[in-house]
Image 1: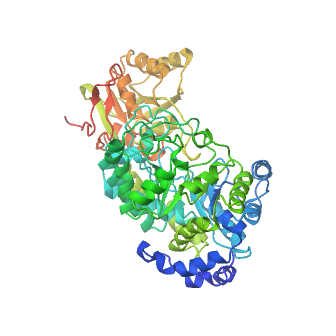
Image 2: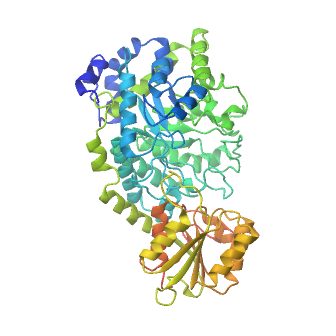
Image 3: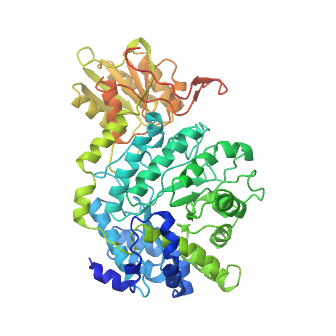
Length: 598
């Protein structure tokens, strides 16, 4: 790894005058003269590159596996991250599990250092802002041995701002240790639609004030640890039945409803000094009647976010490869329109070459001014300076070893998870299960893939945790859509168990049949919702029902401790659960949650 002296030389002395790590936002503009001088020396091509945050395949910046080289050549036209930086001078790179960027913490640190080295060695080289989606819960790119926390809705069930801040602080320390300085979290959407297919348990809940408090606390945790937090998805993606990855959602809220619901957490994030805000690929007619997605809307991004809310930080698009932003305009128009709307960072376009050249052409043709680019680049460089990237762009293996997955961090995650598990049904005080009267347990249910590729499967995690707690537990995965043969196999196995634990996942008719037939055996059945808490409305005959809000190991182990009586159920619903046969009637209200002993 190059020495600090090499870094300073590579940035032509700029770093020495921009030692801003930890500097408060109020001080940012004092350094604008130096940053503007830096921008004035950049070529137009370099300026365009600074606006992009791009994916790249591979575990190494210079020597990825051949399959990743092939993927890079096909999608980006380069072999490696280093080549992409040299050609396009991108200002940011986003890490994904599926792009093979996140094998293990030491590898991630080496990748981050390789990316910084490749960029700083360029003429007028600048540090790269490395980002990822580490929301925790069901969206997680960096897996074990890093500390994995409960997701947002679980934190909402715990209701503790202190826990949210602790999550941000610890997760931020671990991300920074591996070279990731911008995290696309927290989700600031208020999830008021149980049918929301894209947000759901990624939201803290359905109450705007509660969501706002937890968003602000998590922002303080992340940014106190030196990682830029990102509130998403502006102006609010919580009330949709369409996934913007695959369609173009329309939010029908009035302006007045937006003000008292969707806007509240974003206002709180801005008051908390949020470093970046991500746009939503949604149509919001009450805020902009043009039919354009918010990502491309000047009235929403410049008029409301910049003007009315007074936000002057970095605005980043959601992925430009998502269908919601590609429905109305072609891939060459989208980045240009986003910049005209007020965006600063263009995230993950389907074709970097098409998008990069479209912006370059728009400036050369006069549709965009170079001064407009300079505004966004100044915000981006302010953020890089604030995060200490000019001063300390590299990370060390010693820092990784000391920080990532530290015992104190893992213990904190366990304690937080224990405060989130929510007991919704406990007929006849089935729970907690007694090792003496119910020693033999069968664990069945869905086994969705690990969010980070490193944990699970859920049935195995639950069975192992219960066995460690003194039971004899056997796992029998049945999937999200168990066949009649699978159901029969589970029912037969239940005959030899003292009680059955069944994990439900966004419950389907086949899962419901499985649970009903298990209940019919007469064995005590405990349903654990491992994603949406709304599953309980579909299971009126189950004697015990817990909401875990995700299938990450830390949450499942906490649920197992509650089942065994080693921990008390302390979570309270952060969303209402409506009746399955009458969605206008609330079955379990916000704040509902049973305790043992009553």
